[in-house]
Image 1 (cartoon, rainbow, N blue to C red):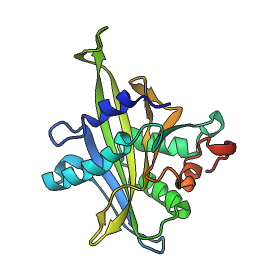
Image 2 (cartoon, rainbow, N blue to C red; image 1 turned 90 degrees about the vertical axis):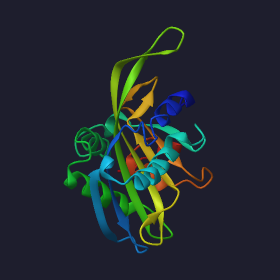
Image 3 (cartoon, rainbow, N blue to C red; image 1 turned 180 degrees about the vertical axis):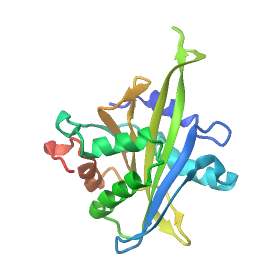
Length: 215
């Protein structure tokens, strides 16, 4: 189960003045599922207007209804190995999204399985959050206890000139559990909890209903 307060702690940093994001990468996919281009840039080099738009999309993932639209899934030990999606996500996060070859591999795997009714964008944000120590009364002491390095992925339909709409699904990796990094889990967002993109769960290789697994 995801602790709502943990997610709210992360989203409080998702404003123009307090953002902990340092990079954004992504790709565009046409209605036939074909690659249409990609980008990879320093988040703070975007205009204020663009940063505000992108922050709204990223924030939608952890701010969504906890344990309803945003659920935690476990990576079985058998997939925590070289060549797995878990290892790819770990490598993407460790390099801060700066390795284009890793990003392209991620896009290719996702595009091969993802089912969309229209063109869409895959947006990946990288951030570092200095987790403040909390006193016994739960008030922050503002001394960094741990640096939580993480990614948020948002998969969004496209409108007009490559303008992404509200995310249909996405994830937070690693999971943020008890105010700390949790490499054994991932928090997955589904805008329509009744009709989830189960293919995303299969691509990620996590345990889900009936123990099914994918990549």
